[in-house]
Structure formats: C-alpha cells, structure tokens
Length: 132
Image (cartoon, rainbow, N blue to C red):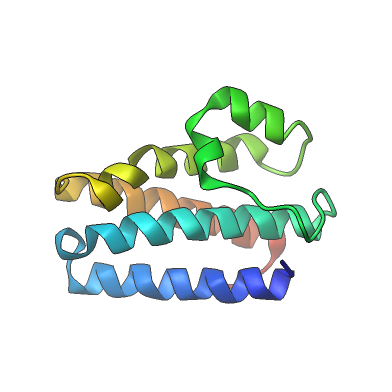
C-alpha cells in the first residue's frame, strides 16, 4: 500500500479514537481496541516505507506484536527509535483482543492504551515530520 493510503487510514483511526475519548472510553472500548491497533501498524508501515525498508506489497500483521521472537524475526533491521516503537506497539497489541472480543475493561486500561497510542503518535511526528 502507498504511504498516502496509510496516512488516510491513520487519520481515520485517530478521528475514531478522538471521538471515542469524547463520548467516553468505557462506551467505546472496541473502537479503541481496533483503531489503536490499526493506527499503530499504519504508523510503523509509513516509517518503514519512507526509509525504503519494506516494499509497497509488504503487509504487517498486528498479531506479530504478541511475540518478541516474531518481532525480532520480522524486523531484523534498524530504524530510528525502533525499540520504543516496537515496545509501544506490543503494549497496544497486548490489550487489543481483550478490548475487541473480551469482557469490558476498567477505564484505567483504556486510558493507558490511549496514552501509549499518543506516545507512538508523538514519536511518529518526530521521526517523520508528519503532523497528525
């Protein structure tokens, strides 16, 4: 997928997350789970595409971030702030399925997830120069 498409998808995810925050995190937990996960993967794909580390046909699967071994296997190259980015995405993925398919979570879990996603957005802006 082209960078422009990832940027459009990322902006949509950010809008959905912002709307969920406004309406109340506990009411929109599935929205938060899906869109933080999708947005995190879009952020990573944009960074890697801009550095020509992956080609346009390469698809990153969110499930990869549930395993440190899989992360190391799939991303065996360096890029700016790699460790921070990978740790934040792993944290997001660690709660994704609970939010999307499990029982309702405490507001603190949702707040932490949004905080981690916002930290990832900040790194993205610093690394790429894209304003979100």
